[in-house]
Amino acid sequence: RDVSHPQTELHREVVERTLQQVGMSQPEIDTKVIEVWNKIDLLSEDQAEAMFANLPANAVPLCAKDGTGLDMLLGIMDQIVGQAQSDTAVTFPISKAKDRLAFLHQEVVVDTERTTFDPSGEWMTVYAKMDMKAVRRYEKFYGRLDGKD
Image (tube, rainbow, N blue to C red):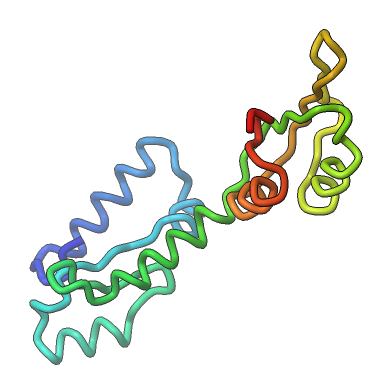
């Protein structure tokens, strides 16, 4: 939001109400929303000091014009996205199952009840909760998740 705007708090309230209207709970808003406080370059020195003194943990002050604070925002976003886990299908030849299953069981949570085998009996697919870091590690060692290297 534009923190230099006289109605900046009203803008925050409108965004929060909108998030609630689309189904986010207040605890989700409090823990999952990053407030981007843009146009810090337009604040007076006194306004900037007051802003930094009352900066919530989920707020990132920045100036899009000159890039101040952008690295911090990108770092936070990378961290959040990297921690997000999704249900991921991992397919590989049964002949390579021992190493790959060992890796998966060591690194992530594997849903063993959803393991499937192709009709030829040569390939298997397992499902695991994987974040981006785990996906990258798997692909570094074994190639694509779909087994089509």
